[in-house]
Structure formats: structure tokens, C-alpha cells
Length: 326
Image (cartoon, rainbow, N blue to C red; front, side, top):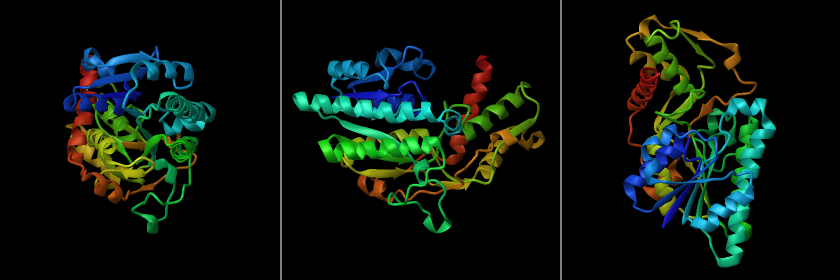
């Protein structure tokens, strides 16, 4: 048995690789581009196999799949930054939609040749639901799509490609729509991680005690990345091909309340001024995301285990460590 992770050097991919190593002795193959930074997987480089390739190059994908024939594919690689998708919509669609289509096409071709048919986790997003009304929460998997960004459009396309390849050719795709997840190693462009980095910078005098923010009134249900990868592990071992599942945490609050909790963890929290930056406001935003995860919990008995306070503290400590190292 073996596992392929696209996006292994990223935030979720690196945590997933660590989780698999803790719970399996099987081979982990990571798809990487030549310029992929290895910082997130520095501690496990000697325990994983990295293969160079690109989702937009089907020949490189076919070479890797023919060589390793992984039993499970976690397709996590993506252009995942919503704000950037407004700036570069075509690049976002190219990476997410064409990249996913290439992966599924290669599996389809190999299935036709020798019956190879791995279980493929396709990582969609809660962004596909867009702005919902209060009477639509908690959000079910059957809720309509209302994409509010090019990123959301790309994730709808990934989602539907996975369904279509299952229905048309029996490719064993399982789709997830992950709600807000965060924790240590999260990129600095994402809200909690960005705030934590600013707080850590203020603590060591690298930033004036002014914390720059966008919309603080959005409501989110938060989950720790370490709970997320445990959910992904259970998904491929317990859930049915062709299905789609919402996955999300249990702590719901506004972004403002999240920031208040973060500031309480800092000795400088009382002196930090919070200032809205117009450049951090999106052309269209999604301000209410509370998931129904009942379908996934019934299928797997998964429950989130990590407290929101631990997520806040560990993320802040991650950025404190960043400034200690720099």
C-alpha cells in the first residue's frame, strides 16, 4: 500500500505526511515542482519519496503514477489563496481545474490499460457555497453553489470533474468541502496566521504596535489542521467513492473574536492598535460559513479534538519561532 500527496510541501500536505508516517509504514510519495520549498517537510525528508512533476504537465504525472502506482492519492495541490484569484483568475483556473483534469485523465488512461484504480481524495472547498443566508446554516452538502471568487469557481470545477469521472468511468474519487482550517505553518496570507505573524513581529519590535486587518465581522467555524488531516485519513479508509462530505470544526465565532483571543495570548495585546486596511477588503466576500458535518461524522465517527485556544497558541508560537530563527 502506498500514498501519493500532491502539494506535500504545503500547509496541509506536510501535516498529512507526518500523520501518515505516525500511522502507517507504507511508502509516501510527494509530487513536487523543482522550486517547491522544503521547509515544511524538512524533518521528514528522509522518510518520504519526492518526485518532480507538475499538475499542468500530464506526462510528468503519468511517469510518477506508472512508477509508483499509489493505492491512495490525496490531491491537495492548488492555487489556494482567494485574494490572488481576483488578480490572476486564469492562472487559478489553470492550476486548479486543468491540473485536476490532467490527474484524472492519467488515472483513467492507466485504468483502461491495466485496471489501476486508486482511491482519489479531491479537495474542494467550502468557498463553493459562497454567501449563504442565515436560514441556510448549518450548510449542507446539498446547498446551492454561489461562487464569490475565481478560486471558488475553480473549486466547483474540480468538485464536478471528480464526480463526472466517477460517474462516467468509475474512477474512485471522494470529494471534501473543507471549511476554515488553520494552525502552525499556515501561509501568512491567511487570516489567523497573518494576525499571529503580526503579533509576533510586534512582540520583538519588528513592527509598530498596529495590527492591520480586513473584514472582522465574518463568521467562521474554525478547525485545527491536525484535526483536518486526521479527517482525511479516515475519509479514504471509511467513505464511499462518488460521495462528497463537508468537513469542519466545532468552534464558531467572528474573525474579530478570533483576533481578541489571539491578543489575549500576547503580553503586548493591550497596547496593540487594530486598524482596518482597505486593501485587505475583497471585491466580494463570504461572511457566513457554518458547516453541517453530520454526513461525514456518521460515516467515520470523526470528531475534532484540538481546542481553538491551542490552535491560536500554537500558531502564534510558530510565528514567534520564525522570528527567533530569522
